[in-house]
Image (cartoon, rainbow over all chains, first blue to last red):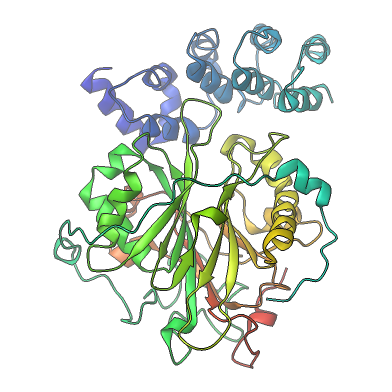
Length: 146
Length: 361
C-alpha cells in the first residue's frame, strides 16, 4: 500500500461513511503490513452499509484466500436490506463449503439473515449445509431458515 | 454487600458459559518513568478537586440531556465533589472504550498524555478495544499515567476475536486505592460461541483507611460486536447471571458489576434483563463524542450492590480538555462512563446516602 493510499485510508477513518464509496481500498488495506490494522478494522466497523452499486466490487473479496478480507466483505454485505439473487447464491456456496474458515462461513450466513428478499430455495438449501461441530453456524443457519 | 447463603440460579448456565481461565498477563507496577509533563503541554492544568476525585463539569456533559441521570443523587444534579470526610471513603470505577487503541495511538504523545489524564481521574478503569499485537501497549500507557508518582497497575485479558484482528480487555487500577490478584481474573468460557469477545472478569478489593470491612467486587468487561448487537445483547442477562452465580459459589461475592461498550442504550439493556439481573446506571446521557448515542454503561444489581453511592456520570472529554469534537475523536469516539462506590461493605444507610432509591428501572 502506498503512502497516498494510507493517507486516503486515514481520511476515510475520519469520515467512515464515505468509505463505502471505495470499499476495495479498505478491504485491500487488510493485507497491508504498512498500516495499523486497528485503523482498518475501525473504518470497516463504522462505515455502515454499502450501496447497491458497490455490491459486486465487495463480492469479489468473498472468494479471496484472505479469510480477513472474506470475513469483512461478508460483514459489509450483512448490513444490506436486500441482496441480488446471484449474490445470494454465491453466499450460499461459501456457507456450504466446509473447507472455508468457520468465521467466514458464519459471517456469510449472517449476511443471509438480514435481507428481506432471500430466495426460498436459497433458504431451503442453506438448511442442508453441514454445520457439524459448529454450534454458532448451526444457530445462525436456523435463524435464517426461520 | 448482602450475604448470600444460597444461590439457586443458573447452575446449568454456569457450566455452559463459564470457565475459569487464569489471566497470565497481570503485570507488575512500573517504576516512575517520566515522559514529559502533561500540564506543560496542555492549554491549562487538568482540572482536579485536589482530593483524588474527578473534577467533572458541574452540570454534566454538555452534549447530553441537561437533566441528571436517574442514577444520580436524589433531589438534585449529579455531584462531583466528595461527600465524606475522607476522599478514600469512596472509589470511582469507570469504563472507557479507547477506540482502536493500537500502534497509532501508542505512538502519539498528545493522545497518550490525555488518555493518561483520563485514567488518573478514576480509581479503576475498564478498557475496551485494545488492538495491538505489541503487548507492551499498556506498559507504555502506564508510564504516562504513573509519571507523577502514581502507582497504577493493570490486568490484561487474552487476545479475542474470530479473525486475525484481535481485541483485548484490560483493567487499569490505582494500587493506592484498589487491590487485586491476577489469579482472580478470567475470560468467560463461551461454549455456545454467543459472544464475539467473551467478558474479562476480575475480583477487586477497595482499600480502606479505617477498621471496616472493605468493599469487594467483581467486574465483567464487555464489548459487543457492533454487527451482532441484537443477538449479543439478548444473552447479556444470561451471561451476567452465570458470572454472578459463579462468583457467589466460588468467592462468596455478590457485587457483580458488568461494564463496557454494549452498543446499546439503557432501555435495550434493561429490556433483556428479564429476571432483573442488573440495572443500567447510565440512563439518559449520550456516551459518544458526537453526543447522540448511548453505547456504554455500567450495570449493577442494586439489591446486592448497596455500596453504590448513587453517583455516576459521563466524562465529557471535549469540555474536560477544552477540545473541539474533531480533536476529541483523536482520543476516542466514546466517552468514559463512571460510578462511585463506598469503600466499606455493609455501609450504613442514611438520608444522605441515596443508593437505595437512586437506581430505578
